[in-house]
Image (cartoon, rainbow, N blue to C red; front, side, top):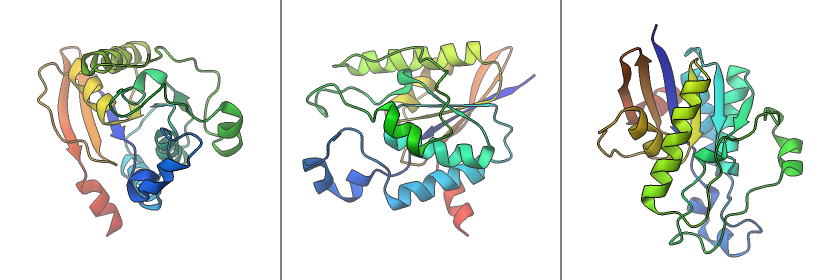
Length: 207
């Protein structure tokens, strides 16, 4: 029987719209979504509403949690925070280990988070491109092996590509804009890429 794994990149970031936010932010590497990013999360949820998804896994960064929470509200599912899907700990982007929002803040605003789930992997700063691809790919492989249902993984550009390339070897690099989706179909013969980084569903939802 076929099963499906969807991989989504988070919606637009607040600091992409307001770059000056970074200069005074308490957690400068963990920005929230912008207003249009929240809309993208809602649109993703509407797009996936009829896809029979059983589990949602999200990177623990705020922008991915907010994207996943919009989807989870529509699908009526909990969110499992998986650190293995985290952003690339790239020293060219980050001067130190990124600080994410603590549990006491997240608990107050994001009731869909399942705090009983424990992450399979935790990234270490700094990471090379090879290391982040290995980390995100290994996480995705572990998730599909241990949760034999239809899954949604909500991550970042690096985790979308790392997860896709481990499940579908030799997949060429493709663009993963904010709010984009990848669809993988799996069976006994392996995994096949059906949809890669397409965002036309967002345009259809807005009409």
